[in-house]
Length: 91
Image (cartoon, rainbow, N blue to C red; front, top):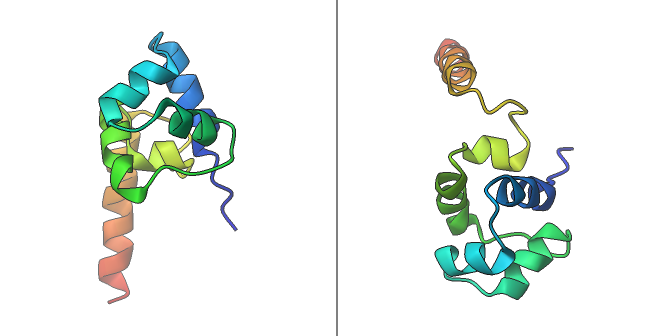
């Protein structure tokens, strides 16, 4: 089972950009308490926010969710292409 650690990923990305929780909350139109709860593992962001969070930090949703450990765009594209081939093969 995949253990989602989006909170720690968000915290690390936010700190890399020298953003406060309040800055991120303002950009996402959520409360600062929401961001704090995500980062402390008490709650998760609404699924509809994931693309916007990814866009703010310039990462993929897969990276946010910990599915892809490397934020290398070329590696992500290559992996998607390989997955598409597998899906087509087993249709």
